[in-house]
Length: 357
Image (cartoon, rainbow, N blue to C red):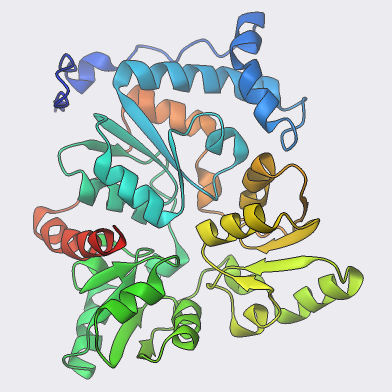
């Protein structure tokens, strides 16, 4: 089957069918003096978080990906949890789930490569139904997305008739299709309050919902879903860090348990955490979230010393430079969503984005 990629409205020449675009072999991936010169400016940016010995392994892939993006009219979207060589060296758009959703909706590329997990790629596809959306490894899932199904949402509606469902973007398209409006950790409070009702169902992250409940008078019905990265942090662990260094600032993501948030100096989304670090420039900070984010923020805040309690997301780490390159070369793995689900799932996402403007 040949996939036809449409030209964008800017008038550029239409791309050839995807099969004709596939090279016979991957590009040369040797670390040559030319590769070193052409990627030197990128290494200068990330030299504080990527050791020199590792760069010759990354640089040929970075050069090849950036060249192939141009010939394919492709963009790479990278979540804050991507590793620095992806986040700072091949990504065209970076940010948290809300930022990526907004930019995906505005993209004029023919191909979108999602540096993140599967629900993010689904969101990009929902907002760009006529574009090719690729995820470099379809096994890049999410414990939150796996914690709830569309049938579960329908059962909740039966148990609480008339109560609107606010769904975290960390969910499948099937779940979104059963929802009233989506939210991210950065806009969850605003979304809940925008409904103007005394009670909402908020799924699937129990800890995010409990945190939102502390920020609003709206009664929130929760679901027992957890992020496998954030739930590993404990309040006891953070108290030990603070006892060892009383001056450290602790910044936590609301997907963490309440005992963790009780120890934090600030609680916020990934974008909120980044803004807090930039605004306050603490001498030492501990970001209680996926640890690649500390590396990415450190590039932009070189004067801040980051303590890394390093919990890695195994799903995010499936996305690598070699897999991104292979995805662009072979146009795989393409994300598809059944039309009947996509039409319904697009509505709550668009409501969220429209609210955010």
